[in-house]
Length: 244
Image (cartoon, rainbow, N blue to C red; front, side):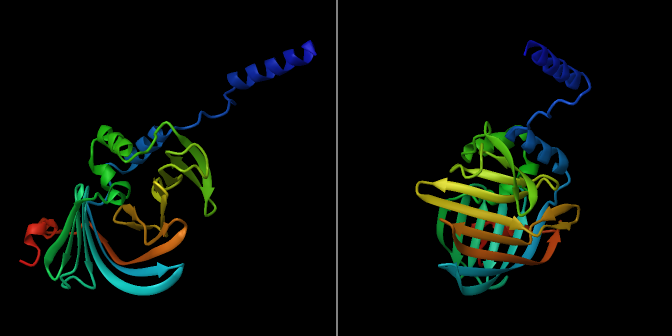
């Protein structure tokens, strides 16, 4: 037995010397840094597209709409429902949202659209601010694991294992872009998927999104006519100028 233990110890020592030790597992912070390093100063500054939106009840399609969307990173999004001149929509700006109907703001709230941050905005902030914002959004960056989704390898930021009921972001290991997101608030589980990525002017854009509440399909989004780095008048994100 002592002879066998000696042989095993010698083999482990040789493997270490030859560089055959198991690779060190990454951390959530390291994956975020990998994403940031790849796309900082390379991500598109703006994105515009038309979106076919499907609304579901009990997993059954009940309504289809056309939305017109404009994004200026890091944190501005305007959605016009039913066309650019409908007078109905919502503006997300920083940590606030403004819903407007008939060209008048009918509701405003502190309501950040955190998907803008995950899907591009993070590349326009200092890296320390990026880490801080993940923590503000209730991600435990001490937790991390790797798994597969849709047949592809993914990193999971914020969760130590599959099925853990904590906020988490799934990252495609090759593209280093978000493909799945879970958020837990009380008894409510929100899931979003970001699929069928397309390269647009040097950076990726998802072209299909799905949203679930407590595992029931709520909404699908299909993007059309995607354009990046367009000149966009920032006045369109000013709620005080709606309808003027």
